[in-house]
Image 1 (cartoon, one colour):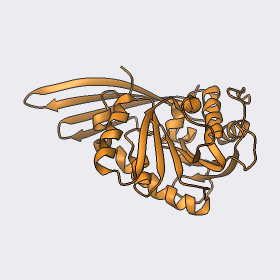
Image 2: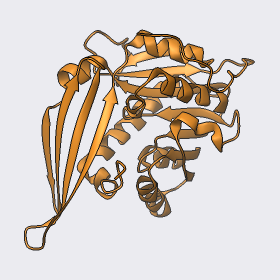
Image 3: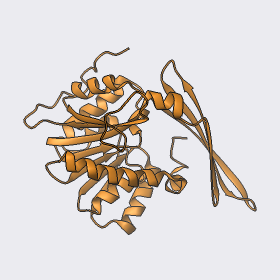
Length: 267
C-alpha cells in the first residue's frame, strides 16, 4: 500500500492542518520581504490542499501537485466547498513536476512540511530543484522547508499516539545515523469499540541533509539562494535548528538548466 492511501481521510483531523495554516501565515510575512512578480503559484506535494486553498482564497491562481490520488481527492473536496479564489489539483511527481506543466508559468513555487526530506538522494533533490527552475518565471521565487539532520537525530519523537473519535494513530520511529534517515512506522485504527477497528500500516522515511549540500544543489539547478531561515523566524539557522526554510530565486534573464544535469558530488 502506498503512503497516504488510507491515512488521507484522517490527515487534517490528526492535527496536520494546523501546520499548513501556520506556514501560510509565515509565507505571508516572507513575501513582504521577498516579493514575487505575480500571483501564479504552484504548491508541490500539496497534500490535502490546505495551503493551496488558503492562497487561492486570497486571489492567487494556484496549482496543487501531489503524487497521492487519495490526498488529491481530499483537496478537491475541500476546494469545492471552501474555495473563494481559483485552484486546481493535479497528480504528479515533484521530481518531474515540469512534465505536464508549462515552462516559466509560476511566480511562486512552494514545497512545505518537510516533503523535500522524502527525497532520499542528491539526484532526486537535484531533479526537483531543476524542475522548479524550469517552472519559475524570471524573478520567480521558490520556498521550501526541510527538517534538519539535528532534528531527525535528536528531537524526532520515538513514539507518539493520537486518539480521535473513530480513529487511533500510533507512530513508532527509529533513526539511522549512517544515512541520516528516520523511519516512521505509522499504524492507524479506524472504527469504534462496538463495531471494532480496521487497521492499516504505512512506512514513512525522511532523510536529513546538511545546509551546504542543499545550497549547492539549489545553485546547480540554476537558482540563486536568496535566504534561509530558522523556521518561522527571520533568524539564520543554527546548529540546533529543527527546520530550515529555503528561499531561492530564478534570476531575471537567467538560462534554465538542462533536465537531469548531474548533481554536485557530496559524501
